[in-house]
Image (tube, rainbow, N blue to C red; front, side, top):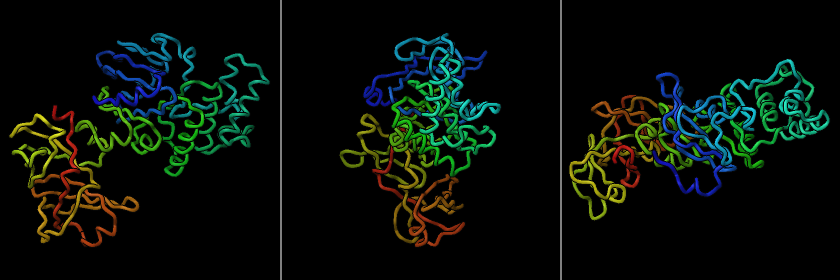
Length: 373
């Protein structure tokens, strides 16, 4: 597992997972989670369904207790500590708002449970209704609100107690695409303004990468990588992370010899390229190496251009706004992805079945450390 230690040391840790394991019977949901969350940090935990991300969040909230290991909140071990004693409110995927209460009453609820007086409850609730720009809906029934308005009520209800940390379990999953983008901006700006630690669980890379300071990638209960969005995107640690991100071409290759004084020449399906010795200083001839090239770093040329590379056929094309993703298949059935602007692609006049040469610069290659230890 790759952890960016520098980021963890930049701020005081408010949360620490110390080799935490969670089992349900014979099933291990979380395996040896060992990481810290900085005070005031926006941390996203992401992965596919069943990877352990929500279980990790639930253990921090006190809804589940670790089978092994310890969780520390502000330096205090909280194993076995009740949820209501942790001050870790959660915004749920379902929002869990009370339909029989007004917006104002929903926001006041947590304060009422804490015994806060009526007048103080009103004032604090009004403050957060104003912050979330929903004052005009204070006396409305929850069922009269739109999805985005309900999200703001849920946030106001969680933040009215002014906690040090806020937990969010896929809170945007039920929203339409345009509302998700708007709420991402709301959440990101709110977190920066308040300086509160946010721990955000999602399966969406766009949500995690657009908002979080750091991202935790999980698979089958294990942490695969922790880093900034840019680090994870540009330097995935292993094959799982590269495949999960979905934008990288993965190559299994073999070192055939030195390339100059500072590189290795590698042979892979249908071609060869060079890799830096800095990444594999102790490699030897004949060693297997796995590396990736991002889709945007792949180049296309006409088959009669004389450009060395891999011959492939166009299998399809996906429109993604200002660019397009071209899906290719080599003569041996290997699938490749190339992302280019529409202007670049128009020059090649591509269509299904077109032949192209795929190539890239050696510096565009990234060796997967977790696959080449």
